[in-house]
Length: 121
Image 1 (cartoon, rainbow, N blue to C red):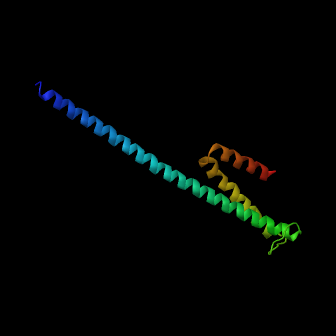
Image 2: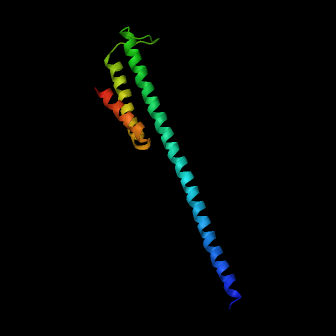
Image 3: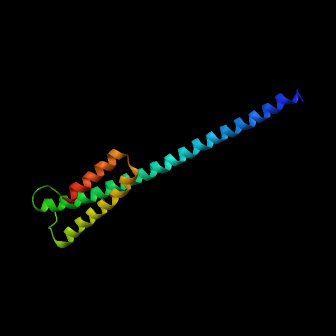
């Protein structure tokens, strides 16, 4: 029995260490995959918000160009259709703030929220 005890302790210690290393590797892999997935969602949210901002800017610049406030090659009169298009762009932009407020860091979320308040004024 005295000769078998070190072997038994070695086997048990090897099994425990093997389990711990496997668990740590699995945890690291999960965190890496989770981070990549989260980063992809955040990138998509930024991209969608940027596109919505661009649509707002184009609609507003075209309306402002008709008044002579800016230069745009395609000015548009403030008809119901043009104003409706600007309102749709603004609605889309407002909807795109929600994913950013949920996914982005706190500073960005506060900036998006304050920008949303500013636009409503």
